[in-house]
Picture 1 (spheres, rainbow, N blue to C red):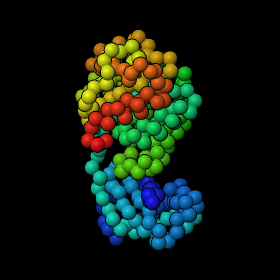
Picture 2: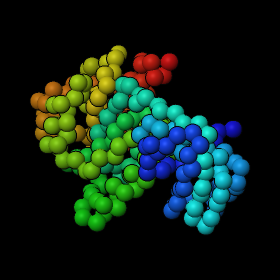
Picture 3: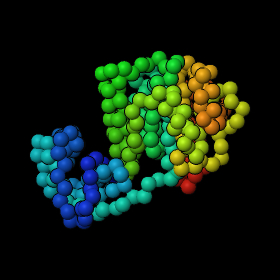
Length: 243
C-alpha cells in the first residue's frame, strides 16, 4: 500500500532520527481526514527532492509529530519539460494542471492568449493562480513526486515569446502544422498549448520569430486542457524517464 504523502516547507539539515512537526492544513488533513495515528508510517517531502519516510509519534488538532526513519535525496528528473498553457474556460484549467503534474511536467506557465475565453484580472487573477498552484500541489502529492512543478505567474504573449527564445527546444502545438513531434526532448523543452479558439496569427508569428517550431499531434484535434498532457506523454515516452 502506498504511504500518504505530505508537503513540508523544508527538510534541509535533517537526518534519520530527526523529529519533524507538521502543522496547519497539512496536519489537519493527516489527522482529521486521513486519521493517521501514533506508530503509523507517512512520507514527507519538501517538493525539492527530499523524500522522508517517517513514523508518527504524536497528533493534535492541527499538529502531526513524526520522526524520520529513512531520508532520500531524489535527483531532479530529466528532461524537465515546460508547458505554456493558454487559459481554458471553466474548470478545465485545473484539469490541465492536474494532468500535467501527474505526467511529470517541471513547470507550468499560464498564458493570456488573445482568444482565451477565460480572463484573469485583478483579484480573480490572484485567486485563479492560487487554485492552479493548489491543484498542482495536491496532484504532485497524489502522484508521489519528490519534485513539485513550479506554476509561474500569468504570462503575456511577449513574455511567452521571450521564454521560447531562451529554450533549447521550443514547440507550438498547431493543427495545421506539417511537422510531427520530435523524437527527442531536451531538458528545458517548452511546449505551447493554445486556447479553444486557436492561436491568433500575430501570436503564431511572434512565437516562430522567437525560434519555435510548429508541430502537430496527429489528425485529431484535442481540447486545450488535454493537448498538453498528450504532447508531454509522447515526448517523455521517448526518454529514459518512461522506460
